[in-house]
Image 1 (cartoon, helix red, strand yellow):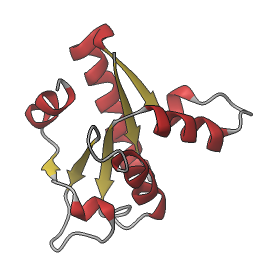
Image 2 (cartoon, rainbow, N blue to C red):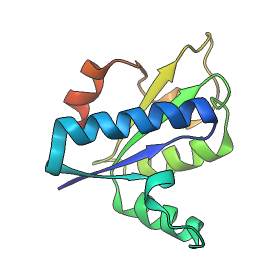
Image 3 (tube, one colour):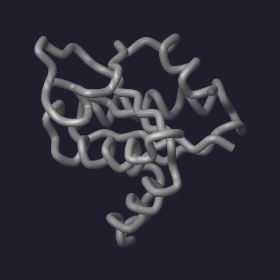
Image 4 (cartoon, helix red, strand yellow):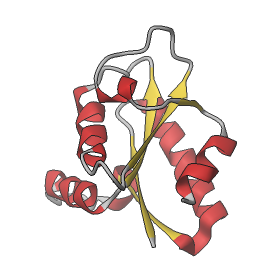
Length: 126
């Protein structure tokens, strides 16, 4: 079963991540498992360990990128953690109204796609 890690870091990207989570759940139903921190991490848990474990176990990440978080150290850390698996990993930034040039770090080095559902389906089903 494919595992998908969905990353966000500011309120707008959290809303995008929540919508993506719900949409992926409807489309793929039981064919994928997903990790979205605000849905999966229990209050009082050691969240950094939970996130680390999911990053280690996942080879497909969706990163909700906005102009407020394009240079976020945390987003780039999570994207780097997934992309370190050079052969099998896929990192999919979902961009929301970003100016050119884009930010710096791992996110800019990866193929980018606009926030369109038709771009996510082929990548997630591979």
